[in-house]
Image 1 (cartoon, rainbow, N blue to C red):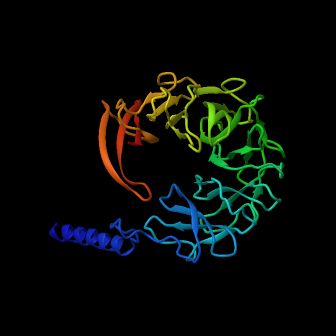
Image 2: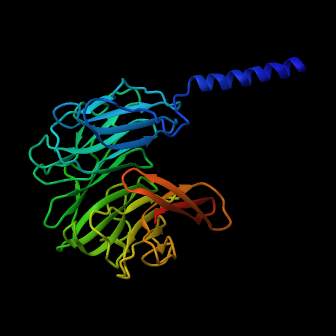
Image 3: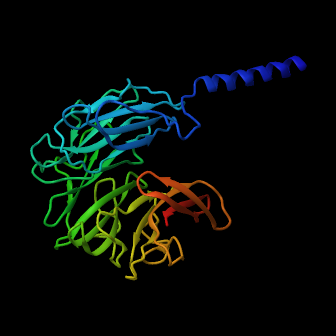
Length: 377
């Protein structure tokens, strides 16, 4: 019996030593894991966590004469999978002024990337790429062209994998007024909603902007976007909208869109945030100065998969403190049973903006989960 116990202890010790020998992640936060150290600038970095615990990192890289898109993968222990400096995704002509883009990991540990470039001419257009866990370009060296409107300015593409294994892309298109576009690709990169994307327009002088998207049930998705008049620098009549889109690309909740927020006074350049609620619904986060008192407060709303709001109209404030501003709320769904609301406080060093205090608010959103919110004060 003693020999068996001794043998088990040796196995455990060897396992711990082996784990330490194969771990690249550094526990010292002052010495972070290096992803890329090539000459030139690495900008607008994105990260995606795979189901197997590995992670993708992708960025715009200026090691050459212009920006190109690169990607790197780290395994679950923090070791790089692709060659040092990452592998090239695209070196097609790129604007010197970069816009937002997206990176996700799908259920098979592939990276799905969507970004814009000017390969078709002077205006930026969106493209989609699928990279395997071994670095193979599964949709070809030039990816998939998402739009047929090559002369329209089309920034900020977003992507999500649906419950049936396809991919839905959502982006802004055109101007005067701005519209939204949507396309669906299957696992082979073949368009499912026709050669041309689905276009949404307000039908008035209202601009649509800041698209976001999450997966819902039966291959559907829930989208969020903003509507305003005037310019994105100084918007007026600001609203936040949402809609559920079926597997065939039709609107589910109503013929136009549902209004999440309608009281205006959201500043320009700000992007509201959308998250899955873990139960085929969506959680919406934003900040506004709805009372016109020069105090910005963060708010949250939730819709279930049927489109019914779960919190008060125009959202629930993340704080009752009216003395301070409360900026940029973000949320994360955690599978956890809780019995009451918890509050915490944590200071985080901001890279460019000094030291800010972040507060944490935990709200129960269903029987087996909570929504955790962070906001800057």
